[in-house]
Length: 315
Image (cartoon, rainbow, N blue to C red; front, side, top):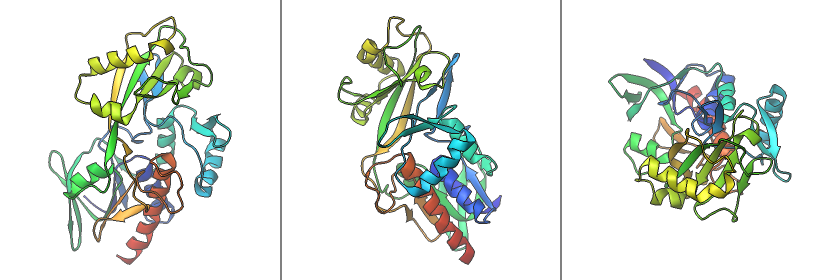
């Protein structure tokens, strides 16, 4: 098949780039996603009767662009204010993946499609698919994490990413986390970055915890079995589990590329005449956070989409 613009990766950056293109009248586009759902790290999983976010838990707002969008999302009922005063933490009312699906509604998306390599030619690009087949496109925007994007292009990655393990623990009774069901900071055991109780967060009918491990800890234990990693995580956070202890539905999510070790000080990179890379590791000018997050992915995708609107107009 052939199309004007292919966007690789249907996470937040890819979705926002596609929305920007479509809203500007560039409709001959295609979002290609290797997973079975849009959202990327806006990920929610059902576990028995419960439900858990196991990627981004919330987002904050520092830019007027995102603030304007969030006001409309609040009116639509897609997000709500969870906790925090100086920089409120917003979360999806039905989980973070539901927000991604709402944002992607109406976009041309091809799921369960893995791209093996991308080649650029004077008259366009070719995306070579697993199992055979080629998609031809005038322009390609790659929103996958930079190491994966670099692998597709056969170039050196502009940034390195840390992994992250997330233990998803089902409980037989209430946890010891107090409202609003979120705990992070120095008081947690070494190696534990964050704990979230999704029943107290308001998206699960049963107690399910997400336990996030630091990048350093996850890297150290990356090649251990799921069973061993989960057992270690449970031992570390047992004081927070409550009298009911853990149930039998425990799972482990391995994010190989969770957070960039460093960032790129521009919202996207041109990797060729017709190739662009963007994502949460690409920060817009004036971004004082210095780290990957929901808002950096949002702004990077919009910036790349706006650039492509101009680029497609002259191609």
